Length: 162
Image 1: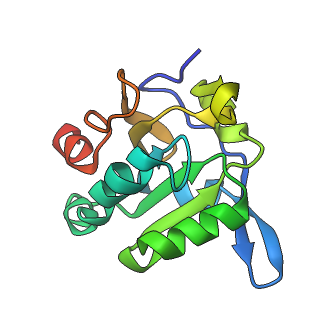
Image 2: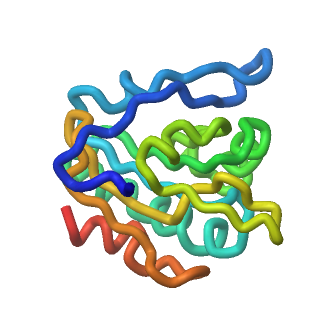
């Protein structure tokens, strides 16, 4: 079942690529006591994620900060090497977005937003979503209805909702 507004976000261990390889990242310090924008994509470098979803948040970092957002986090179930490469390719980190790998899909499954499309190699992937989290509690959750689009979950749409 998909997580609902008013529920606490799971706080699993995520991954990122450090100087010595993959390293664990506890999600709790990123969200506890903070206002956080969290958005998830089905796959780094996939067309809609790369050309629409990530750019919509990059161009709105300052607008989110103006609304009191402390942290903007992007997740995908890609491995930490892919996520690090995508971070670099998009300039997300330089823009102020934290890019984390949910390689085990712990957060994705904990939120109830997983899907699989084996024909294209997507197993235990994250459905496209955008959320506003306040002190670990989901305040706004938007998920795309249509495949391959980024309308309800774009940075602008989430800004309007918070």
